Image (cartoon, rainbow, N blue to C red):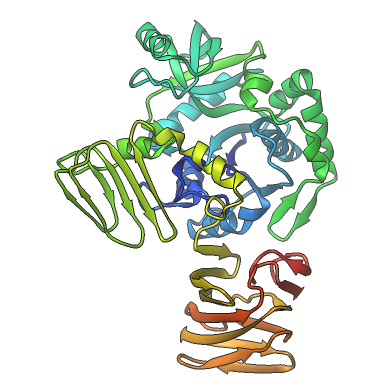
Length: 478
């Protein structure tokens, strides 16, 4: 029986879906279509086709989000690999290939992006079975998406001669994103597919081709895995990985190998590359508007209107994207929605916080949300999961006042330990060692009022932690 191992790449930041998608909570963790996040839908869509749990590649900042979302949807993972530095898809897949190869020299990888939508999961499962048959030798297969129109935002794959497996062709050429005329020519040919970024191949075949074409990536990944260490639920490759060139799998292997195969599929695929693309696959009202949240319209057509925290009222507009979050609003034409990434790049150059974090920030123990921030004081809402605890810590520049809204809290303050119930509070003086825990079976919600000369998140000295985070000065709350 062939061992089929899903490899889920979950390290992207999804800047074109800003302000919803941000570095510390990117789009794959959001529920945009259906009742699961994009990551959870990816983890579960192979169903019975996969013979092991997934190998998930992500970054340090999002490791606890990945683990928590796996648990929420009942997925037992094979490994969660934490890249010490993002180096693109070719090095990331090399890490996963080595872990799969250590278990089974004939393991077949099904490489999936964590932020795609696939409406026909059964169609994908059928395609994977065909692909596994096609790569039984030394083939490296990519899924091509039957083009719905002349899209200039995707690369294209040109199919050549048939392979030995029905429905699968040899790749004649890969084409970069074309102009409108060339895209129309590709679609009219009937031989071209959109490049989906999904792949099937043996782990051993991929590593052999990578060693041939990109020996620096191969060497860096092999060394990083050999020197890597387990850390709680995660696997940490060594920093030798950081020397790998930043190269995609397309450039590193697929466009250079003689064994590239393509299987064209029609599975309701979308990479949700922009707010306009998300609108295209959502349910719409009778005027063509895709609406999420508190939105009222009058004489408004063919727009994407998304509200998280307050009313959006749209009058007399057409082909508009309006996205509201508690701390940012995006306004764009649908045609230019794909250019949001350029705006995010500019904000990062200005060292603004909005591309990095939401007002609500997720931690392994729960989350905190900034309600008010002013000179010398800050108000936060803190939510602590059942059985979870913040780190044992202290602050040099601020004191804190905690008020329990719902649930029960155990508070450690220096040598004291106290139990607080709803409407009870405690004061944490500047310099006091303290810890907050939720011993109950229900979530704990607190209001925290910080007062001091400096309120930055790096004013935390951590002494103990249940989640393997390094003691000492911290840049993370709790």
